Image 1: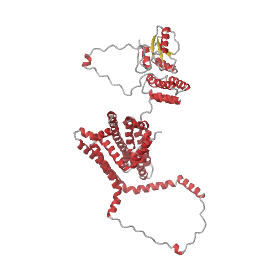
Image 2 (image 1 turned 180 degrees about the horizontal axis):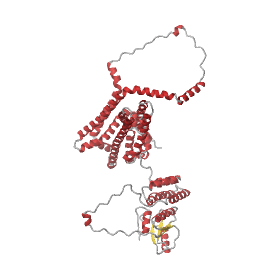
Image 3 (image 1 turned 135 degrees about the vertical axis):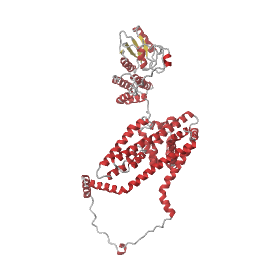
Image 4 (image 1 turned 60 degrees about the vertical axis):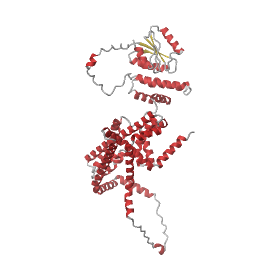
Length: 576
């Protein structure tokens, strides 16, 4: 057993844990550089120069942070004098609730518990001598603090975050100033042998992170604005403070918005004698967060940020365990970087498979896996989902026929029993019957077609286009002859179903005088003696019928053969 990957993972996790004090400021600086990179690029396009662009972008970011801090401080100062009154109102409501039936029930439970308590001991306490009964006075005097100690005690909670902020700011400025040079060094370090793949990975990671942060910033600002307006309409004091808090806390995945709801909810309880404010505040957060998370964000992101929902949860747990609350804030962007690297670095592909939003299996592999598991319902659900974006013939060609080929290959190498193959084929035939109501047409596009533009003078001077090809014939009697393979009959049923949907008269059995004879099989080989004998027999029995040979191998064609799909067979059968 190879334990090298496990040992490597343990070493990496240990290094991330013990080097937290060094890595957290660097990661924050790099992420800040990603946020400011589009702004720096904008100023550089305006001919500001590299240095001036970086300085202006950093000053704008500092101004936004300073303005946010000033607003929060002003709102807190306005709210502070009324906090004791709000606390008294909350305490009064809690006392009132205690006198209700809930409080009475609690008292009943307490009285019942006291019945089972052991009675106190009646044993008399030992008598102490007069000397032992007299306490000895003891006084502890702390030495007076010096001015340096007082200043250190007062500034200690502030100096740590301030030092981290300065380090983050300096490193972010350095990253922005040396962005191209750092990218070249990373390429040289990790992928100089494959410049194309490494450059693509770095550019994709940088672009995804920049778009993610800017989009999150805009969406969270919108969320905070909605919360502030809603609280102002309800009548909650300092609504701007709670809107800013909601926008900032929403950077925490899943729970941030609901944690931000706790302070205004408590304030709503203490701001009035009744419960109207509290109920409206709770409904505001319960309505705004799902709409933002499940309606607006999917529309803005396109469908996903590149991470699966499970990845966001696992990443939040993992990075919080490693780096605490700051790890929770960095969990999504850090995992997003790793997933992007996993898509381009073969050694890290497992990260993309585990946490990426792309399907782990292709539609063909997923179809075959569900067939092996005997999940007929899941096979049907997958078919319904895929048919929303492709016609029925494409689903048969791309998924069902491909899945049958995988089953036949496993049967040839002994990995699949005969009964297992027969079960898969039977389930496939049931699936074909269940899809009889689907039409073989392209799904309708949601966008309406644009109106045709009027022809220009140059287009009017062009010669007339050639006449269109003759329309396909319909109403033909088509005989679908399946080969002797175990899956050939199922493929013939698919072909017959498609022919009927396109206006032909297919037949799976014998026919007296068919117009067209289609030779079809899951793995058709025109050069094999079996298929040559089958074709010769068809020509002898129906000399006037047109023979169409189904070569179900994409990208290949021969005389009288379709190019490799059921759709091509349908078109070849209808050709004049």
